[in-house]
Length: 278
Image (cartoon, rainbow, N blue to C red; front, side, top):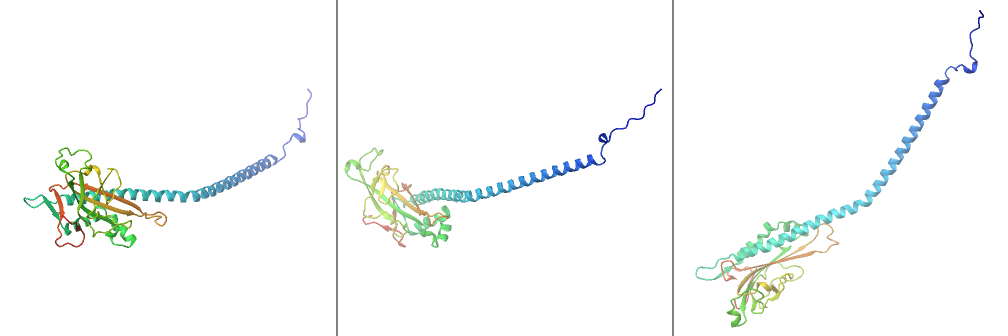
């Protein structure tokens, strides 16, 4: 039997010691370099994105602040409007509930009654204290509250004997001021008390309050207690750019227990004046 010598592989087929390990190291280094480069690119992108967000925020922030402050002022204005209405209606109820002496139909209020009801605005509308401090004035100089009693007189016998008091009776009755508060603070826009010896004129029911007019629906036999309140609302923010907003509200109330609420001039402090002829 022939004996063959063992097969010896060629040198090219033999693995070179350490060659596989070297390739792995190079591949790992390349992979790590790629990852590092990618991480740097991502970090740069994020940095650029953050800078863009900062620029956008800087541009939007003034608008957001303007909207926020404007919203605060709108809420404050709405609240002031409601409180002015509350002051007018509450004081009119106080004055209209004056009771006449026994066996008479005419009630009377005096200076103390007017001062007391005027001071009640501090409870009904406490914002006036804060507003007065901000303006550097007394609280009663920030709000104008005016009182008046109106008596209706028929123009002729037909109007006097008229039984149907519904509808517009302004053509049948004259509205005369019985007494008025000439001594209270008046708004910067002008005097707001109802003057004596000047007949009140009829106006539409939805017309703005005016010291010379009354709603048409209020005309008829009897009398009225009228309270006129004016408050100039000044925004806390931007008051140098936004002018004061006039808030005017009036209340017209029938006397509850009397035919007329007149003014007692005894111990008068000058807060009100009784008109000639009453």
